[in-house]
Image (cartoon, rainbow, N blue to C red; front, side, top):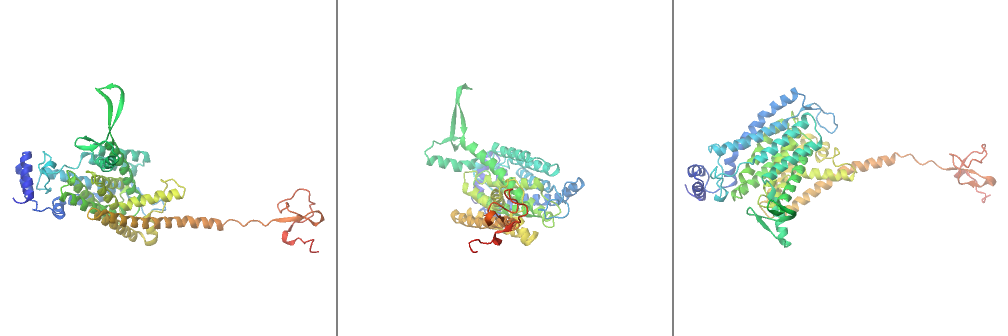
Length: 497
């Protein structure tokens, strides 16, 4: 064995007592790790997720049709004219979970996968040179999100219950610190610039806020509050709610969400592989596995979901894809690298932008932000180009944002910020103009339909004077009934005679 990877593998094996397994796995790795070589080692996750979803989807379709879990085209905003089965999200869930379990098996059976070698400080004793597995909290959150969406697809549940499920999934992430450290990259530098004291807890910088107690409890006279942890928890909750519902809102055309999520997953995979090349930390494998599992599931579902679709994702699928994407983006900031999180948000900017435009549009029209309408980006493009062309156009927009996000992780971020802002501004302004055009046309039509004002008519008073208070609708009540009303233009001018 030669090269840096062999040395790392030998050190890792000596440190963990698993030198034989570590060296054997490291020998499969190239002398210099690249994105492509690391991708090839994990490609089994993509294959398993793809195959499982591809074959699970028709089974779920039959199950949905047999039990009447179908979407009937009763809403004029819907583009399909025949009932379409739901439960596609369950098939996607099976594919994603299957890919994750394959990676867990790969940790026990090295011939299934070639994990990339890591620094000794990132070793997990149980697995030698391997990174940590996908956290149980992530799989728990995925399961809860899918079940909540499934119940909504089958029985219909209140929005509060769906939000409650999303918050539970967010709490599960916070329990295992998935995404919590993102707050450190924002709060700690800000606190240092303001001269606020920094504490160290578990080797990580944070800010402790001590709440005094009126009496000694358990030998303590105060309660320490980890500001960074709780701020990170709030960020997780907001991110999960935002991205889950953004994915749900954009799922309005055949193949739109599954295709755009596949594009975003490919871009996020490029970023994750780049972090693995430099050995960013113990979450490298987690990010790669999640990206590949989501990508494989989307690619396996897309043939069934592309126009004309035979099955829909439903809330089970749209909320699930939004949650998985949120987890990947949050883990990009595991070491406080906020610019990578911003890059991830730009990669997934299409659903976020569409949701932001919907909120602005409904506020401008005086409607509730939860009110349904047909002014989303995909609705506008469908009216202009048709379903397939609209979806392909949105694929192009999603691909453009994906390239910009990947570029942010490779080149100077300020240039990418500028390009992303310009693109988002043009899309946003154009969408609002189109949406407002209908409101302006409706207002103009209402003005045109108003009845013209009735011409005022008056009666001559005594001596031929005009009584300005008299009209055709009645006078003072003292006029003789035989006096007919005459228009102003017909009254003779006494001065002229």
